[in-house]
Amino acid sequence: MALASEHTQNALRELAVRLYSISTGDLESRVQGCIGTLMKAIIPAVRNLGYTDFMKDTGYDFITLKEMQEVAAKASRHPDGYFEMIVKDRSEKLEHWSRGCTTLSVSDGMLAPAGTALRKTRLNGHATN
Image (cartoon, rainbow, N blue to C red; front, side, top):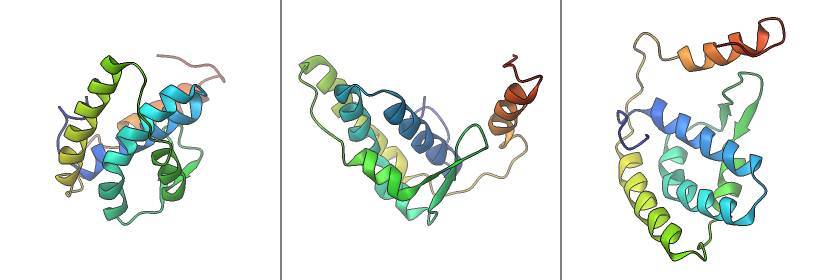
């Protein structure tokens, strides 16, 4: 999905937050290794954004650049050659894609994903669609 999105800082930030959340949400070392490899590919571009704090999709907490770098440090090869080839391909493409994410989009609707997440959790304490 990231590779098909516009080359914006917004898209890069969103991808970095999602990769971080996947890594910390799944304790399987193989998953963390794959996600770390993907994060490692984009971390130079994330660092170039100049931010140190990134809001989580819930809107209640922040992830630091340091925490994202810790996820990237978990990069490792996957013992299944099939997954290894996919992760290698995607990480190379994401590295190239992330270097082009230099503009910030302030068009209408750019905060919609965060607003939607907040609205879902606040309505009567239950998630709604």
